[in-house]
Image 1: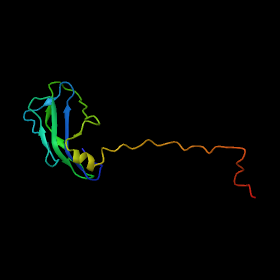
Image 2 (image 1 turned 180 degrees about the vertical axis):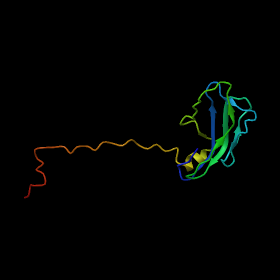
Image 3 (image 1 turned 30 degrees about the horizontal axis):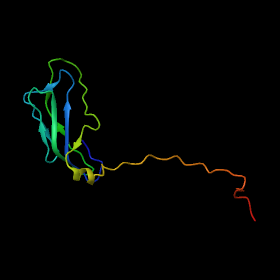
Image 4 (image 1 turned 135 degrees about the vertical axis):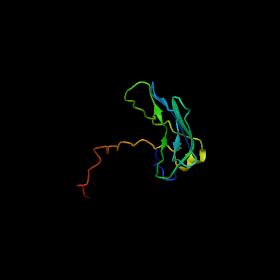
Length: 123
């Protein structure tokens, strides 16, 4: 996970549910480099969760867990954009995530009128 807002993110939380047939190993050994973060990954469980994490300003941290499957296959797993939530209102405001960027507007063409003579007209 990474933080592009310069103040960083506090109270980051997410849950990642695995694809079918993929589960936490025993031991799951869930861990994180996110300061203050708690990883929940039950042995044999089908998900991993992070709560209360701080992602440093313009930095990153990781969440790791051991997984296994009784079915040999390639498993693609990702956390959807927007899955990360913020428990701290102060963090949301500090990182300006409460702001909406207005859509770009198309430049308006200058209208023409018979009384407008243009830049070549001199008195």
